Length: 132
Image (cartoon, rainbow, N blue to C red):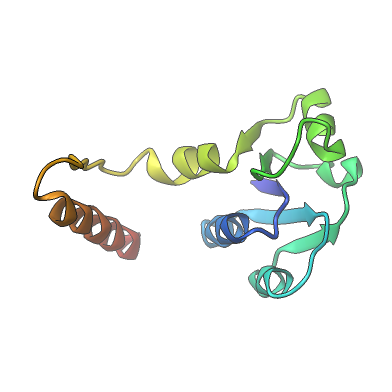
């Protein structure tokens, strides 16, 4: 699948680009200003990031992911809506592509074992990610 990230140079979106590449997807991105260290990390991951917003970058894209800083009037976001391309937010992408098949363990914040349950969730996720 070819995925385009709008506002790709943020910390979260850069990490998402890495997850998508690791999962075998082709990833491109754009940001207002692409500069190190994010641009270097993305380049090393094989992600082409362009400065500015150009709707033509959406040609051939299967999914558009909008970062938190993207407004409705962003030219690429607007073009994705007009073309009726599948569009997701950063959290939606994480949930739908990476978390839906995972076990959910929830701890209660008000119980004395909150730290233990948090550590258990982290450990479980780490173990599952190393198995895949």
